[in-house]
Amino acid sequence: MSEITYRGCKELLFQRMLMAVASSILVQIIFMSCVVLITNLNITSPLSWIEDTLAIITCFRMWCYFTVLATVIVLQGIICSKNYLNKPPYAETRFAMFYNLFTPHNFMVGTLYLTIGIVLVWLHLSLKGDEYNSLTTNCTTIYGTCLVEEYLFLIIGGLWTGIHYFIKMNIFGTQRLQFPIIPQSKFTQISRGIGLVLPVSMTGAIWPCLYYLIVYYFLGSYIRGIVVSMLFINVDNEPLDQMSKLLNISLIFHLWLYATLFTLTMNSMFLLFQVYLTEWMPFAIGQSVYTTSQPTITLSEALAMKKVPIVQYLGYLDLVTLAQKEKSRRANLFTLSQPGGHPYNWNCIIVKSLELINEFAKEIDIVCCCKQTLKKKPIETINYNCEHPYVYHMRNLASPAPPPVPAASNNTNNQQAFSSGKYIMEFIKTTRQCFINYLLSKPLIFYFFGTQYDAKINHLLNNGQPVIWAIDGLSSLAVASLTEDLYGIVQKDLPGIIDALVLLKQSLEKLHKMNMLSRKSYHDDKDIRQMLASLRAANRRSIYRIIIAFKEYIDGLNLEQPIKDQLQNFFVCKE
Image (cartoon, rainbow, N blue to C red; front, top):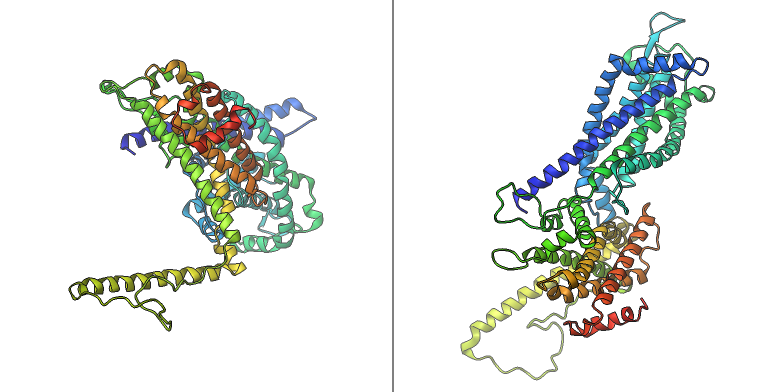
């Protein structure tokens, strides 16, 4: 990929991420103001309640806290943007999956979550102005400084919420950007998303609070002792790690409220990144040799951007959009390049699209074949019957070979040496494979180091959205070419398009019949099944679209007989 293309990607993604971070800061300020309004609730005097809330929100100290919160959100956007921009890693074994957890990026994300959990609780406790706003206070029964254990309880609760969220979303789960099925405005997506995220955050914050209450009941004395010994302070009140003290409705409400706010902060940041990064954008069909402006990313370059999947997704989204909705841009795609008179733009796009479809179908076939052979194939034994000139402890019943010609003795020796070396290498390779198969035959070793073909299928289907757009876009372009392609540049690639669609159909049917997704081992099993159903539906829809449009011309296309046999069910509408 050229340096210009990478620079264009950076500029495009930086603008969108900057807008997402700025919107997240605004949303967090609104959330923080709402929490201040709720925590200072005074039903008996509504006017003073509103006046006190406005005074807190508009004071200088509040805006200093806003600055701290904005800094943390910017760091969150910088660190977590890697999850949205880079290709998700694939772990072939459980050991590799466990090894991928201990990466510098995960360490930074975990540290960020812990920091946000503590900072959010600290900010809101500092704004309350009641007995929970400080870690220490003057003792009432003894002389000196004493610990406010409720403050410590809530601060450690924010730390616990960060740990819980990190384990839930980064170790036992992943967050993937989902493109909206129906294009909507940003405001509509954000308002609708917040409405869905809010109840999920409120109910999802209940479990970490319950876990934390249980943990603090058993370990609260150790935590309190460590803090007291480190700060050289005393304990004046009754310890908090007792059932009567922990069942404080006000304390539990504040713990749940801050856990909800943390979850809402994380989910709203992901929502804003999704809204801005998945917004459709038109790419240039091709660069003109006569333009002097700075080159931008073309559609063919976006389709080939495998290292930055979000740009590749946007490229295929633009492909299916222009194929179905934009006649003027299709005209640019169906034109010949000048000078030269070649279909350069179409060739670049068709090559990248067919490459994606064929590679996806090929990987599915490989995994299905490996899965079948894994069920049927016994442990391999060492094959000693390799071709070599020596016989060990065996009678030779064949007729004796004639003696070699003296002139060719050097060639014979070279062939014998080559056969001996080949046999030794084959013997070592086979022995090593047999040893590996023997180790993998042990259930415990196979559990950690055996290849997870179900995980491979899940990884492929999670990246199946651009394939859906590719087959929909190519079939729509092929249909539109009947009336818009003045030079007939699409017809030469029509057999290749049909072959790719039929081969993909066979691969998806094989995957569906093997029922490889019957075991619910992943939390996103529903999404994976839905993606498989969407792929099959899009594939059938694309083939029907081409068959209906080119029904009178199919016999004139250069198609192999197995492909024509597969198309018969589409002619009679039985698929």
